[in-house]
Length: 331
Ligand code: ADP
Ligand code: MG
Image (tube, rainbow, N blue to C red; front, side, top):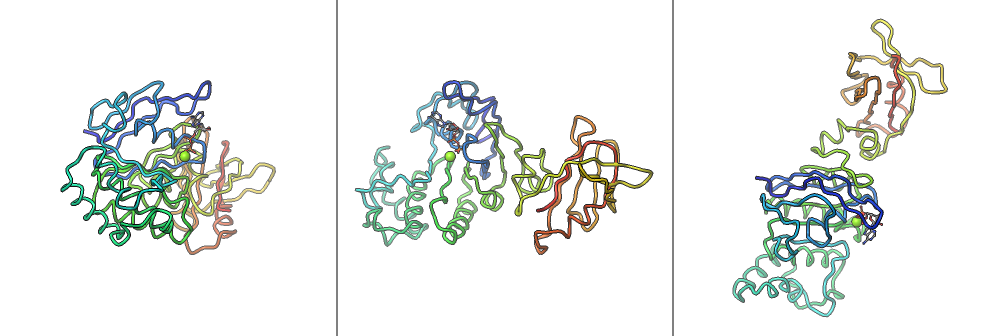
């Protein structure tokens, strides 16, 4: 049984197609990050999971139950928004228990939940304050607390850290990770920040133009990107894409960039009809073909302690073959 399953989901706003045939599955307790550039459809997908947005085609299942037409309040989901969306006239206590009161939970249970969650998030000393009397980080904690007290089946986060300064963002990221490790609740987390995605997700689904480009572990996304979009989007510094040709002669492979006559030999390669793996310096450089045949891509990852410029590139500049190649080097 999958905690969340999205099947062949499509969404249009008028004539604009925003999501195209999305298929996603999340196992119990996993942390799925939806990562992609602004406008690619992440929030729309999250809102659809929450039931705040309608679907044109496809279905959403929670625990194998089709919730596509179920009201948001009946989906057992809690959402944390980028804007926090706290009620300004209510204090922290009232904000945190609002959803429970609406759901007519007993007073005893509400108090118990409030005490547990506010201690856990270290906002128990702030219960009488209004949101305007809180720092950005405290507000974010209250917004998370309001979701936590409901003990939802699935947590949805929409860019919850993007309004915080850089230092606080790192702190809160650590806290969200800790929270997930302790509670083991299933999470879907939207961000455009690849560092956030790589450090938080057990799985990352990379989106572009409403299409899932790759849904995989952070490690595979980084080391085995399925296309040039993913390869270019992930990694810091990001890669340059240099088009050229691979040439193979006897046991040598070299790369010739478009507009250049230089044959740059690559050491330590393995070449067959479907893939080229080059390891000139370390195992950080891979060349792979993807179908259709003869379309090659290669990815270069800088070792963390190497500066952004030429070293790996120079080594990379040592390959050869005769097919179109996309050559990615670290910038
Ligand atoms: P993201 O969260 O990845 O930045 P969104 O899901 O918010 O992207 O938006 C995806 C696309 O859908 C954007 O082009 C946006 O302008 C469009 N869009 C979002 N909501 C609406 C709406 N209610 N009406 C029309 N277009 C919308
Ligand atoms: Mg968004």
